Image 1 (cartoon, helix red, strand yellow):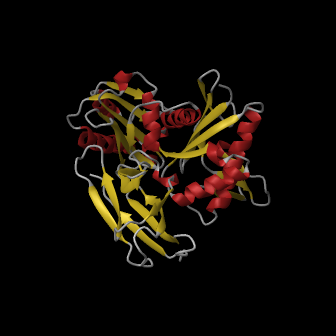
Image 2 (cartoon, rainbow, N blue to C red):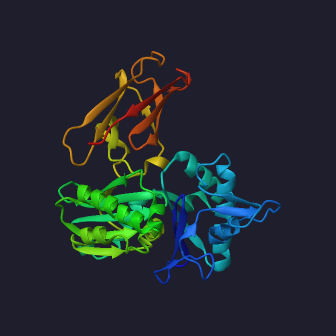
Image 3 (cartoon, rainbow, N blue to C red):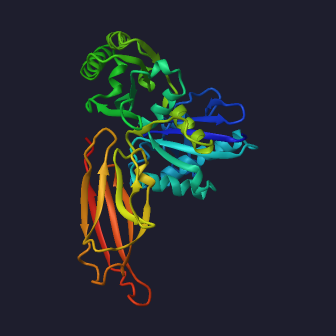
Length: 409
């Protein structure tokens, strides 16, 4: 298989990109300049009287000069789309210059939050740069962690596995547990942002380092307790120099294998990109984490004379790019009934949407279009539209819209 796929961990404070060579099956970190880190600051800067924007470390250096415009946190700004476009175009052009003769097969981007507005902005920018829609994918950082571990020896994730990420955006914890008793088996990733008051800048002083060590130890003791871990990974620029975290390292290291893995999230995104172009999944698990549904949603319908359970969405599906539509012929039922189930639970939740606002017609003379989309992993938007029944009963196109909220357990 020829060409390249890319994994991009796109955060508010930095970006990290891995190019995966499909023919050689080799991962390559991307550096904007040869002497720079592969942790690329997600910032842009220019001279006030110039249109020549710089990104990354060059932008940081430029910001120290007088008469400059320096933009940080590209995701939360009144000109977010404009500034994201500048940064993304610079990254795109760099990749094209670095790999002029390679086909770009897929790009998977991990975002700090899978907000539809962010996904929409970035997708539009990339499509304007001639990336085809089907080559662009978005996943959570939790999913990146799973794919990174999946590519390692099973002994690193056979039991509980954990990742601590420390960067300018804060302190983050991810925990993987395979549920082998579920049918099918599930990979469950718990995520928590730890201590919102933690500021990595306190690491600049000795006293601050000791305080940070205490904060991390407190978080780790609460989360890890008496669990048995196959591995614990550390990532993020806060752990590049970890001599300040003596007690935290000792505590984490007491739970078997402890590693510093600087590329874990970008590499995981690249492996997910590889899965998109490969034939079939890289694993047998239903992945339950940020960005995926924990619930299977179905309805009962008669298919070729037999009543069947028809799935609208499956546990493990990405909710943020999921839209499904069914055309149904209404029997005598006064409602559309959705059935919600989770792998580890036997009980099934039933949620009904009455059809009382649609035109009254004889039995089996009303076709309806049922469409579902998702606002988030726990909220489904349902749209039901009347399509009538040919010339005998013309469509009114009346619509019923309803939000259905469900909480995973």
